Length: 251
Image 1: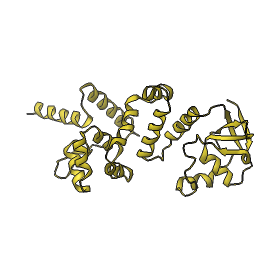
Image 2: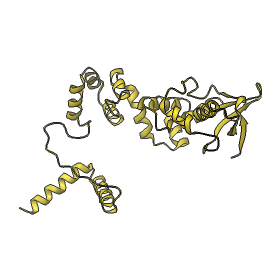
Image 3: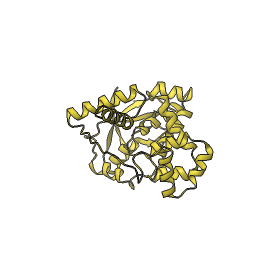
Image 4: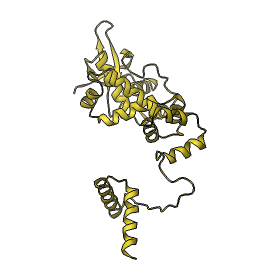
């Protein structure tokens, strides 16, 4: 991979860049990057394509890095030059954005959908090309099938991605019913359906804490997970079963 310093003034954001029309500088993470980033700290170069017609470079990957350095007055930026264009370039841009940590669940799901639509063989092609499990791709796509009210609750954090995926597996009748519920009603119904994790009010609970920094705790948790998987249980049910068996022996 050859990296070349390219004059910032010769770079335009490519049409294939999936975040081309997103604003920059209003998000806190944008400002943090702009404040700290310099071309000497740029561990991952941007990716560009040279356009023979305009004699300029089209930025495919690294829009925020490019805009951060541009706003700081840097004259050049390290870049990898590729020949990707069209659907292949858009797919590369989608995947680069997909692995960002600051995407909301719906942003990620929408990008997965675009990636699937722009890749040959759909879900199978995305799984093969980018190493994403088919089940994970299907789960991300599934939340886009939920009623708009439920998608909004996922977006504002009232419902987690895990809960959204579980709701997407319910019938459309149940989804419509959930969408019309108030927040307290929805929370209670998710507990009743076994979708919401944790313990609803009124349940008797035992809290066990495993510190991953301690070898003993980490190894014990790993053994519990393995044993639970062998018996097609989750860890909570396995621990409950262990306690019950112990109590039977001590009678």
